[in-house]
Image (cartoon, rainbow, N blue to C red; front, side, top):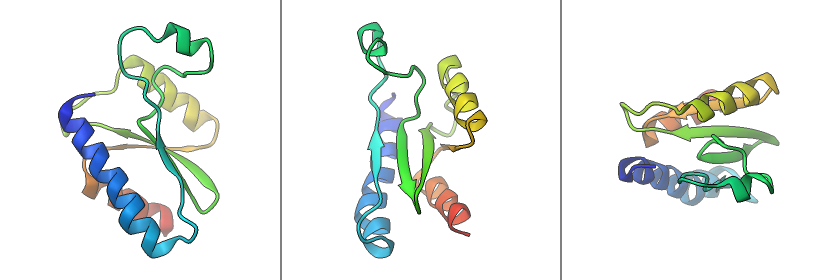
Length: 112
């Protein structure tokens, strides 16, 4: 994860937790990060880490959503593409977002 992606993800998380959830959900919805970037995670794969897992997973109205964060020019890795396909084939929603505004637009579409 690049510093720019980290900043976008941080902005999304803080906005979702501190603004969106406080305004619309009591109790708050859930959002969490799966730290799967790095070199050798074979020991973590053995206990359940899914290579390519999306950066953020969140709940909304009883559903789970998967959100990959990229910069405006960022590209998914092969593992991320495989993970996206698995999520979608399993009937869940997967989103690729490139900014806080992009994430907000995604939430608007979910809530319609």
